[in-house]
Image (cartoon, rainbow, N blue to C red; front, side):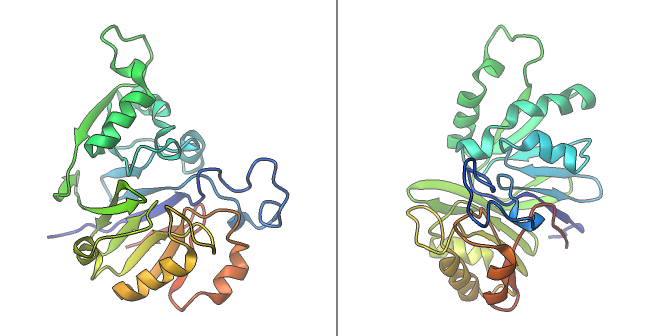
Amino acid sequence: MSYPHLTITFLGTGTSSGVPMIACGCEVCSSDDYKDARLRSSIMVQSSTTTIIIDATPDFRYQMLREKVKRIDALLITHPHKDHIAGIDDTRAFQFFNRKPTDVYANHMSLEGVKKEIPYAFQQLAYPGIPKVNLHEITLEPFVIGDIPIMPILVWHLKMPVYGFRFGKFTYITDANAIDDSEKEKIKGSEIIVLNALRNEPHISHFSLSEAVALIQELEVPTGYFTHISHQLGLTTEINKVLPAGMSLAFDGMKLFI
């Protein structure tokens, strides 16, 4: 299968509370290093003709303004937790200027979550100015948006099924603490992986940093970046010093060219 050249932009790399966290005065939340300031986790995947956003966070509006995004072709949802779907209402601006609904792709559970998040968008008597979305249910079968082929990957967020996505040699996974062996096979051969790493201590539904590092080494992916990071993990510069070669913390605004 032929894959176009892609630009990956990290729109946000923080956990559900973001960094700095409200009311916190820890050294990470007080840091002057821009790499320690993290909006909620999301990425933008772009070819020369297609723009895809993965997850519409509560920071979606600012993320789009910061990156000067003028058009999106699709929104992919990994799972229906608030920090991954709360920004869907703000897609209205694209609908106004692009004069078309937003195409939203997700599994059945996540689409139901979207309906609950913006129920007014699905009422028979629609109020003027509501977001207009086309819902597309996806499974674990590969699919294509524009000129970008996509391979869904099932991962586990405790007991919740979450979708990661592989784009050619690049794999993106957030909000996971376990991956079945059959799904790991889909990741093998990737050259770059992005994986959630919440903190150093174990967590009930997220990989810790050491668990994420071990998984990347197990899968033999040469380059790894970590996302969905909390203020508990530590300062970016200090953590990067102790990570294995080829691994580092992602940061907001970082771009990869694949």
